[in-house]
Image: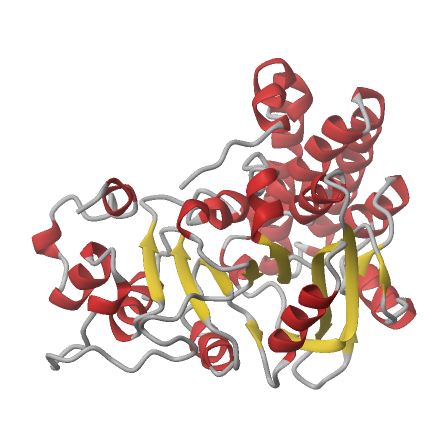
Length: 372
């Protein structure tokens, strides 16, 4: 068992406590040796021959994704592109870790990585970086589904446009309706839209008013993002200081663009994105780290002045939500829970604000290291 295998299995202090098929997925560094439960033969490998080098390395980070993952992988493994897939589970409290391990044992080109704790989406995406062999790396949310050969066409676009470093497809709901899939800018007005107003308002407005045309953008949606592996490695992957927020992919694309490449939105390619399924299970974590990531992003890219302004806006927004939810909570327990969540978020913005710890956190995060 090599160092990488040891690093990815601390969740099991005693390997004998895991099932035989789970041990296969954890211990087998060579995915071609993995077996199916009840069989002594390796499975057929979807999307990749046993000796074929992958064109795309796919990273799927899961947390409580047992309902969404089967459809995601079904659509992914049908893509006519040589793939290798890294399933990275962030210590899900449900059956997702076992499901991830089972997929690792079933397919030659699927690698199961079980983290001992929830390290966040950005750090989770970085986990297999040094193991990736594809020309491109696809960051894919588990609540997405490819319905056609969009990935093949995204790869073809990058093959033909060497000045482009990152591409993203149009995101659509299950009914086929488009939803916002890229941003041309990210400043105070976007914070007001996405962090201060109730979530339904910016989602409704931007879904309907966004321009779904091929163009260069500031960043594409992190739910399905294809990047050249050479660029991903050059910039050191995601900044792990972003735990779970919009700004992690904004930061990634901004740093990618500084290498001289373009970031392009491809509206003719589509992926179904069911949006926010894992976040439902941990609302405080989602809201707090969304707010924290926004403050950290402005501190990192815009300076302390704008970071302070953003902090003030988020404090006001949290306070308004506490008051309104408390009033509605008189007749509904649901709103009392919302008020409690935002009370915790308000306290966290004050007590754990990235501005307070910038002297020892920001330098290390400005140039994220490569993690495996």
